Image (cartoon, rainbow, N blue to C red):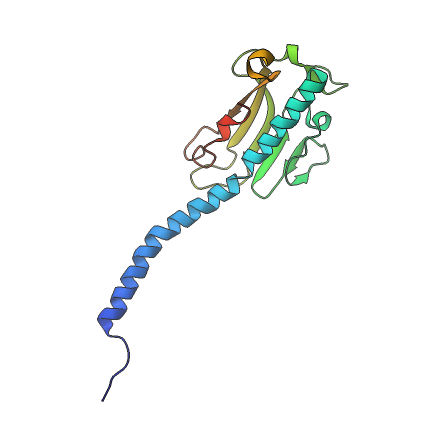
Length: 176
């Protein structure tokens, strides 16, 4: 008589293998999910930098979102200076010297490496080890058009803290 089925040993081996795979795959999966959520920050900042560059080349000034034509991802707030997705709150942090035009002449921008606030994205949810309220920023400074080809220099910063830089490894290269 022929018996069909699996032995207890075979079933135990399968369960052990599945446990090992789960122990390796689940943390990796959550890491990839957080990285995919954070991936919207780079293109949003890159678009801001390109529009700011084009505006500076045409007018000789740096402008607020409304002046340069920037629209952040997500739902726009009624004030027009912020936008929200499920993961980030984007904000126009540009403080223009000319409030009627919402601009600052490029020559009036800071010449320090720190720069002046321009664009920010604040995490609304924890992204692995990167805490809620972690902030990615792009600051503006006076550039050297003859050396870099741009009138405005950009200083992009990852949030300080554990685990944020690994989510957006190339963020600090934006505008360079």
